[in-house]
Each structure stands twice: as C-alpha cells, then as structure tokens.
Length: 117
Length: 110
Figure (cartoon, rainbow over the protein chains, first blue to last red):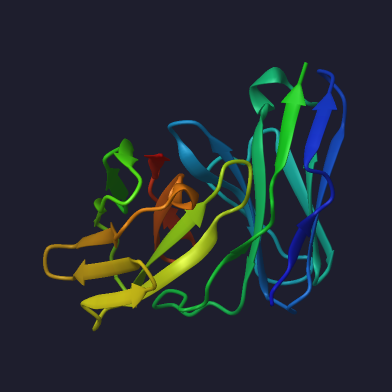
C-alpha cells in the first residue's frame, strides 16, 4: 500500500514563527503536492513538484515556500506564520503525469491541522 | 474555466437509506473523474475512478455513474451505514493539476 506520512497531526504556532511541514511518500512517486483545506472552499493547491528540486506554484502560493531535495520528501515552509494560515494542510503524491491528464490516483497523507495564534 | 461543482453541500440521512451525490464538471480535455471519501480529520481516500468510456462502476455499496456528454457524475450510496458519514469529493485531472469540487458532507444518523 502507498503510504504518505506527514510529520505532525496537530501544530500550534505563534504569529511570525517559521513553520515546517514535512511529507514523506514511500512509493517512488514523481509528483508531490501541498494543499490547504478550509470549510466551504475545498482543497486548494499551494505548490506542487514533479521532480526532485523542481517546484511549481499552485493557486495560492503567497506566504509559502517548498523544498524537494529528495524524491520521497516534500516540505512546506511558512516563512512567517499568520493567523490566516490556520488551516488543514494535506500532502499528496501521485505517479507520472501525461499531457492528457493523469490516470494515476493521488494518495493523501493524514493531514496537519495548523493553528496560528 | 475548469471547474468541478458538487451538490448538495450537505446531506443528512437515516441509517439504511440510500442517497445520491452529484458532480458537474467543465474540465477540458477530460480523461477521468474520481470520487474520494474523507473522514473527519483525515486525508481523502480514493473510492473509484471513472474513465471516459465508463458509464457505471461499483465498489461495494458505492456506485458511480458518468455521463461524458452532459459532463455529470453521481455517487450513489446504498443501504447507508454510520461509517459512511464523511465528506465526498469529486476530482477531475486538468492540465498538470487536479481540479477539486468543494465536496458533499454526508451525515448518517442512527
């Protein structure tokens, strides 16, 4: 079974702190994604990566950065946490992508619920 | 604009009853559509994938349908159980990213 793990289930941080969220997948997947999920808004893509050291902005990258130094690990960084970044953060991975759209299932981690005070 | 819309936003049913969730999409080009189940506080888990040529697919008590002409999909849950209480999310791959619906929150009452 594919396993996607996230470093923390719950996290409480103060405004202005630097926050690291880590995600690890064990299926040698090419693609990794970071989403945030807020009530009524669904999942919104923050950043994704289709290869080591490659990253692409998603729909809401402002206030976030990412790092992918190894294929299995994708980190989300909040440089200076703000209260509007309180949310559920979900990491996902999937295998290769084709121009016509991926047939590959996206596998999600359990999520990190972040509270910024 | 590529969009995925789901209805209803929320639904409450009694245990043992059936229900149907709807998903309309405008994603082009279209290759497949997925339904995910997300339990409270957990990550989404894939229930089923419908490809362009498929009309109906079952996974236990879950049956998904796809009408590629009208760009609609439905997820039918038969003989609901308390464990079906969750959010159900419809997802369509776009060009190098997935397009998510906002989900239907289902509550099954004893």
